[in-house]
Image (tube, rainbow, N blue to C red; front, side):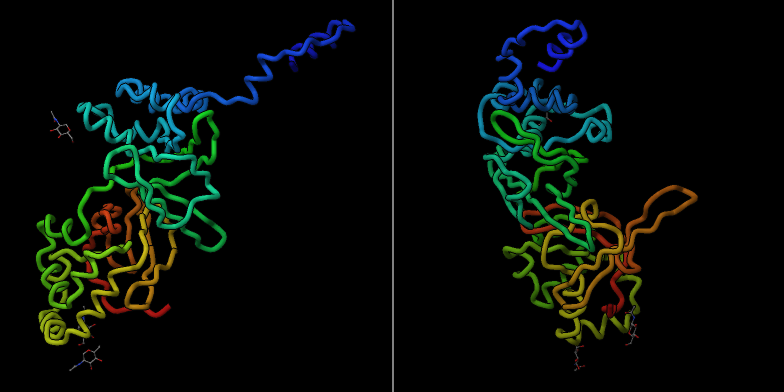
Length: 307
Ligand SMILES: *[C@@H]1O[C@H](CO)[C@@H](O)[C@H](O)[C@H]1NC(C)=O
Ligand SMILES: *[C@@H]1O[C@H](CO)[C@@H](O)[C@H](O)[C@H]1NC(C)=O
Ligand SMILES: *[C@@H]1O[C@H](CO)[C@@H](O)[C@H](O)[C@H]1NC(C)=O
């Protein structure tokens, strides 16, 4: 339309601009999700969707909400990704939920079933000072509400790992370096809570972290269940927190009642960002389980800090 009118103006032709119905339709009727993804530049995702044989479903079925990792997000996984077709199909399906979920409909800790059978998507909304961030399984959403004919697209910064089936206790039982932590959790009677509905985030000190604590303190903890439960519940927060969605300086209220500080430190020499909670170093963050998120810690949070 615009081009036609411009052409007419340039040529000084006084002509009646014919109604360009095709162009008009193109503007008002959006494309299918996959075509829209291509237009938005999610070309790596589209390539994988085609390899996995999901193009037809995603372009014409639905309605769906697609959480679309950027090309950079796929590049971070290296060139080997993905070798296994079953895995590829499942990973792609875990990025899609049924229905058209606009950003305004998103609530914290929303669990939506994905196209991957039995595997939900967890959406978190975190507000700290003036900033609200939204994450899908810990991948921050940076592009919102791009409409397609059969759904909506939100752009995310990393490729999502599907949430495994087990709960926090089951997952921790499978991690070798947590045996002593689990012993203490059971001693304090917190195991049923951590296997419950949640969601919780646990900042789980590994066995090596307890080894840094003086022997007499461990003895004191074991002798006093109230004290033990207090220390352990200072390592658990209600809600699902991913390091990739919360901002540095965020204070998280724990089950114990006092707060822990997300305190990443940039090592200038190496140019690496080390993650800390309070002064305890994080070994591994953002492990999804079906009732929350696990972080593994290199240190025990010494004492509840007062903020
Ligand atoms: C491919 O992935 C599926 C699901 O994760 C797994 O069950 C299967 O063993 C894998 N196949 C190969 C050849 O690695
Ligand atoms: C050990 O216990 C003492 C007091 O009983 C306390 O002052 C100290 O902070 C504790 N150390 C750790 C690492 O928790
Ligand atoms: C056990 O710990 C709690 C909480 O710190 C404390 O209030 C209580 O006095 C302790 N009990 C004994 C017997 O030391």
